[in-house]
Structures are given as structure tokens and as C-alpha cells.
Length: 165
Image 1 (tube, rainbow, N blue to C red):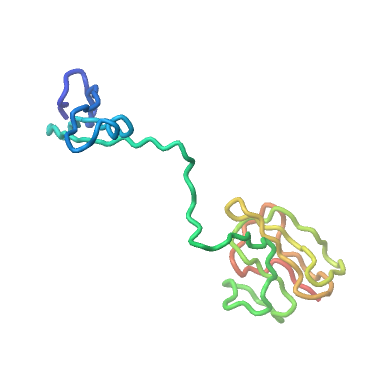
Image 2 (cartoon, rainbow, N blue to C red; image 1 turned 30 degrees about the horizontal axis):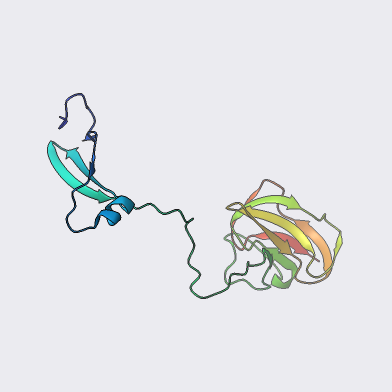
């Protein structure tokens, strides 16, 4: 592929550019604030000439708020007693006695052991998904029957992670 300028071998070559100072539609003061650059770009052997207005803004970018106040969402989620669909291949006798993963992620901490008595809303497991930690809490008081995951295990949405008695 040839280049529009000698010494350049890439498909897109940019020559040295000089600011354009003769812009009749702007006043001298406006030219000083927003200089215009004239560029020549070579693409596939064709030369294109562009005028670019350089805007300098000293303010940091701001996120739109759309008239609403922002308040962060809690990261601990209670597992629903009866999810819309169960993970494929799971055989569960009583939905009221299981805790399911609310997100797809990796188990980073198991806070309980089999046979342990638990209280309602007690943090059982912590799952990380996209650098966010989500806690799986006990839907009611009871006793841990089976823990189906270990730290480092991948889990899917609605996968059973704990069974209670």
C-alpha cells in the first residue's frame, strides 16, 4: 500500500500540520480561544483535507444526573425462596430449604459450615461478579445441611449453593 508522503509506510499517514490563522467567520478573540488545525490525511492513496477546531476546556467532565439524586444500591441480596427457573440437573426436594446464587460469579468466601445453626439474614456466602461482591444471606433461621460450593468455585445464577434442614 503506497503512502501519500515520502518516508511514511503505514496505511494512514499524517504530515506535520500548522494551525490555520485565517478564518474569516470568527473574530480575532475567538481564534485565540479555539484554534483551528488543517490536516491532510492519506487513505488508500487518496489525500483528504480536514479542518479541526481545537476546544480547550479546563473543567473536569461531569456525569449527567438527570435531576435525580444518586444513592448506591445495597450489595447484599436475599435469595428468593422460589426462583423462576432452577439450574439444569438439580434435584431439590424443598425450595424453601435452599439458598441459590443471585448472580453468576466466583465464590470468594463461605462463612458457615455443615451442621451450623443460622439466623435469618445471616451472611452465608460471598460471591464476586465483575469486581463486585454479593452476599448470599439466609432467608430464614435454620441449620446448614449441605454446602455445595467451595471458595474459588464458579457459580451460575439460581444455582443451589446451600441446603438447609
